[in-house]
Length: 585
Image (tube, rainbow, N blue to C red):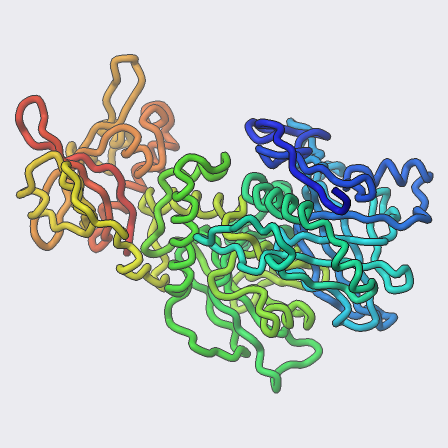
């Protein structure tokens, strides 16, 4: 039918294993390949079109549909035009142009600094004539745009003089965690933002089936694969390690949750002052919260940072990932066993926003809120108030991410591992409300599963088999470790029948009602200590690391939440098995 496109089933193409090179991303959506009308140009065909024209600008204008990977805020040029940029991807571009095994050294001039994409630049005399991009994943429909080259790469240009138009489309109902997306078959299901260079007829000429297919592909792409190059990826830990050498710049990309939005009051703003600050957390770094900037307007600011709202948003994301029940993508499956933290580890830092255009998007247009996850591109570090913070300047970009973006899931997975290793939480962290922690369906099972917190004395009185969620302190191990012995950790290991090493020991735990011994075995012990038994028996550095972790677990006043399973042994004795634990204080 005229004006329509469709998705065609192609099996499991490009969805299963790791791929590189030219074919890597040509169908990152596992189920479908998107079919376009011949008049709509695929992004992978832009460079061949330029090469056929000796890399000169094409005379004919083209139509391109893509997914927003990132975007810059509107800014005024020296010619008093408003300009913004949108970074586009589609199902025909590879996931990476970097061949497997390529060096990522900064001395390599060919190292990949961003995922394969095409930049669209838009110019307008009136800022209102620029379309509104709100997040990664928005569908961008470019009509009658100019194709040119910049640094031997294809670049798209939209200007009023060329009668170009760009329309940005997203579902009206939003796409937060737990939101069930319908068919989105009608134009009424979509929110549309247009540049005003074209006519209203172009809005009605949109290919809605293509938009639907592209949007769904885009959500799967952002959820399943990295959205930024590993060569430029940084975490808050990198800032900490840089403190001893402040002359060395940290420049690159960050993924983080927003914990506070702090404007600089209008009467304090000058040309050489920031517009405002974001407080950011990514689960890494020491458990400290940087001091607030002095020149900010603080409204509804609590002593908690990250506040409770961030913990609640994380729980929603964790529940959404868990609800896939093994039917999600590989990144979802890597997050199996992910638990919403009651409190978080890691450092909270300041990010300074200098650009008026970006601050307007944050404060006035509210593209982000507390609890949003964002990608910062091309930001660098600065030293202020004795700490290393981030600076977001005119060459940087900030993009809100979908709740299940690949980097968000990896961030939460790595934080979950830190919590389960017993890494201390940030003392200023908010606490996940207990109402959020209670299961929705608290129905006893034949195995007497106790879903709410249980005192140890009740565990002892309950006939096995049963499972309990308990809060406790760890007194010591059985057998006990001598921290002054270089082989202290080896006493917690045993040799398996196949000759490999495994952990086999017990924690003596206590709460206000009583004390008990819980067995800590195999994989559960390795998760808690963050090392394998095999490494403990062969590597002195790993032994030292494991002993330090174990010592932290047994510090007085450190409280854990964990799952304990009771069972009846062959000798008719009751044994208690520790299945998991994580620090909550």
